[in-house]
Image (cartoon, rainbow, N blue to C red):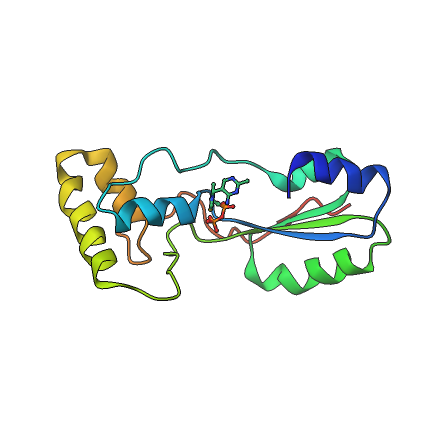
Length: 149
Ligand SMILES: Cc1ncc(C[n+]2csc(CCOP(=O)(O)OP(=O)(O)O)c2C)c(N)n1
């Protein structure tokens, strides 16, 4: 959903419930690069707060960083008469997997990894694309839910 569509929903007070899974990356594009043997580049998204954007447009919006607060966030959102948005902060290290994994993709992924040590930033990116990365996530489920409105 694009910003213009959110504005239309807000302008007409449509009872649309939006859920954003925020993994801080263009995960599918990152995976496409890696399975083609390329260390990923330019696919990490700066820390965007989609709940704040939605709230500025008049949505009821919550940002969930604690998984135990998801149900409460959904209940609030569905009970709201107008437009609502729930932003779920997910693990940027969780690897997006294609429905069927081909041998060439496995080879490409390994090739991307093998190229990475020559470029430390690429190595970090490749590591962070795996769910078993050695580095800590840049941000993780803080024990809070922001932005009740
Ligand atoms: C209008 C449009 N532009 C570009 C693309 C190409 N594209 C496919 S997946 C993707 C990245 C999607 O990233 P995100 O929405 O963060 O989802 P994720 O892959 O991380 O789950 C892009 C740019 C597209 N599908 N549609």
